[in-house]
Figure 1: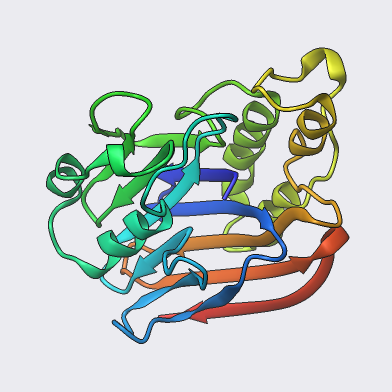
Figure 2: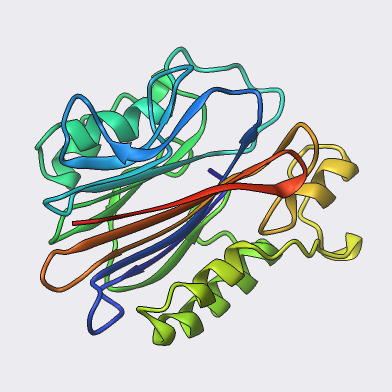
Length: 247
């Protein structure tokens, strides 16, 4: 996943709001959002190649989401980053204690958001110790938390404004669907070729081999009720399906 926007304790009715895009090669096998066989309380998609997930939530409010850190040329870790999110959702330790026990050296660069109804934590094996996040709006792409890449800065500002439109999901999905790329003079230098920098500068990424495969909006209400809507896409950004799960 290459973009995660999180509003934590920043809305009067929804303590947790997450709008996220998962960017991946279309050839990597994946399962759409649904209840997990290991624990039907867990809602989320699955990476069928390594067994992990990019984003999931449990009916008791336990939440996890992961992005990779873009670092071309670095040696690949021995363990899939998506397994971190999967393991957190299937276990019960508090987010801070769980994060402190993670062996970050086993994985390639990652950013991990972990929450229960009381706390939200951020952990990256490229950004020091895990830390608890205060109430507010946060953004992740493929660098550290709130790195001011143009697409993340713009998406965060728009997301904050869109929160006032909830429970209508469309303002948030409009942000996630934005295909506008950034002018060359404003592109970050993340070590990939210029053509890739352009492609990846859009909020919604599209090409024939790689792009945004899922746009997800998750809300948890004050009463604990969850609503997870996932819209999936194929090569070139072609719409494939939409599904909504409520608890």
